[in-house]
Image (cartoon, rainbow, N blue to C red; front, side):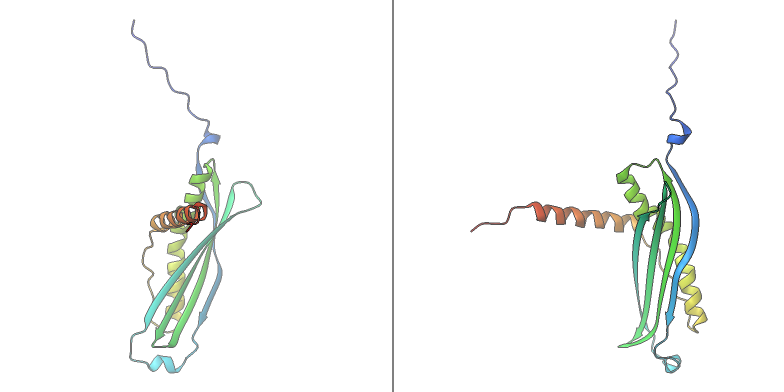
Length: 167
């Protein structure tokens, strides 16, 4: 008599990892044109710098997390600022049944990857409404940024634990 393989017990649906978007919104947006209107007569192309910052926090409601991706775009000609745009794109995410190490990765990679297209659109819109060609933010690999941050933290911990050399 041949034995049938026994079905493996499936985890209950309530135990499955869950990721959901509850709300996406612009928390803050600002535009500065400190040298307008003279800047509109410049013929030189500005140098554009982009910086991004991501922060996450647990909300008081169970399994809800607030993630804020802040994008700052500065355009300069020599030492004069053409424009400065800052967009803080927020999101509230429901994340359940994800172990702590993976949760940190989700908050540092998946959430900002979700927010970036919205921040990109807001930056392009504001810059265009200010009278300039739109700035299109390039794709960011938050997975690589997250891995680099982890490596830095591990190196800092290792150097903090390493005994000081004696002479």
